[in-house]
Image (cartoon, rainbow, N blue to C red; front, side):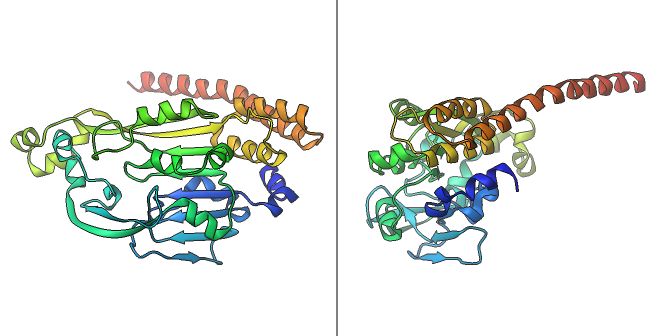
Length: 319
C-alpha cells in the first residue's frame, strides 16, 4: 500500500469521502482522479445528452459516481438557448462570437448547426439532492461560463474547495463569456493561489485570407506552418488553507492533491502548519515522503544532463 492509499483509508475519508466535481466531462472524467477514484464520490456532467437525469453507476471505478446528462447554469432549471456547434466540444449556452472568430483558423469548429431550448440544472440543487455538503476538487470546462458557475456556489462552499480547475477564454470566442482576466481578478480576492496555467490556442489568420492562399489540404495542416497564438487557458488553483477552520481531513486531502499535481513546495508548507496544528504522526511521515520526492529529483538531474551531453556527442560523431 502506498502512502496516498494509506491516507485515504483513514476514518476521515471513510466517514467523508473526497468529493470530485467535473463539469464538461464529455465522456471522459478527469484523468488525474484515477488513483483516488475508488475512495471518492464523483459528480460528472456530460452535455452530450440533453435529457436531465442522473445515473448511479455501481460498477464504476469510483466509490460513488453520479453522471448527470444535463447542462449546468448558475440558476436552477431555466429553459435556455443551447448552441450546438460543428464540434461538440464547442457547444455552449453562449452564442459563438462570429465576428471575432472569423479571424482564427479554428473558427469552423464553432459553426452553429442547431439552436435548441433546454432545461438546465444548477449546482446548488444537485448538491442538495445528493445530500453533499462540500466539493473538494472543482473542475469545469463549460465553454464560457466557468467563473459564473464557481461563483454560483455559496461563499462557504467556495472556501471549502481545496483545488479548482478552469478553462477560461482569452479571445472573444463566445458572446458575454467569462475571460481569463475575470477569473484571475476574482480568485485574487479568494483564499486561493494559482498553481498552474497552460496557454492553448489557434492560428490568428482571417478566414478570407486562409481560403485565398491555401487549399483544403493545406488548411488542415495549418498548424504545421503558422504559429499558434493564445486563445484560452487551462488554470489550476489551490486553496491556501490559511484560515483556522480547516480540518485535519482538509490538510490530509490537500496533501494528496499536491502530490497528484507535483506541487511539493506547497506540500511542505502545508505539512509544517499541520504538524504544529494537529497531534498526529501521519504528518511527519507525509513530510518525509515529500522531502524524499524532492531530493530524488536532485539525483536524477545529473543523469538527465549526462544523457543529453552523450546524445549531442553521438550526433557530432555521426555527423
